[in-house]
Amino acid sequence: MKKIITTIICAIALTACDKVYINGELDGMWRVSQVEYADSTCQPTDIFYSFQRHMTQISKHYEEEIPLRFIGNLTYRGDIITMSGFRKYLEEHRVCTPEELKMFHLHSDSTIFTIEKLDDDILIMKNDVGKYILRKW
Image (tube, rainbow, N blue to C red; front, side, top):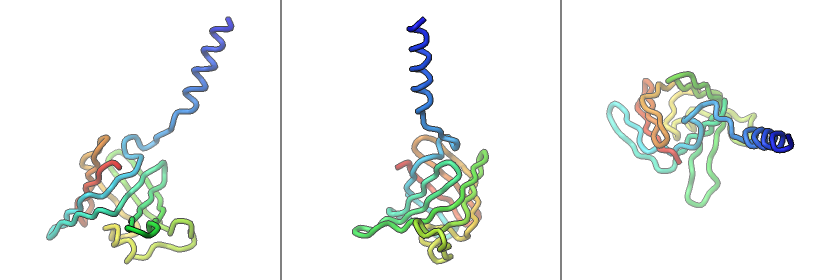
């Protein structure tokens, strides 16, 4: 009887510590590797999108400076991602400006993407502005 109770307690303890990914393969940090516009393509090396639960973080990393980070709302349903309401990291009162969003290749504070491909390694999403190719970081 002691063995059964011990086994049940161990099983509960191990499963209770498991991470909860409500967004499946989308959750995690992604590096923007390419953005394709109708008339051009760019390949940034310093822009990251992170998705966790109902939050997204966009960050731009510099060589010797602290990264520029903004936190926003995330809605993920099926093959649609919506990011909105960006505010400066650690300064929640400061709203992200349109110029700052452009540094991250976002052209509106409320951006809706359709997912073309999502797996463990790659995220391809597009909106009315362009096609974004991201790699899992």
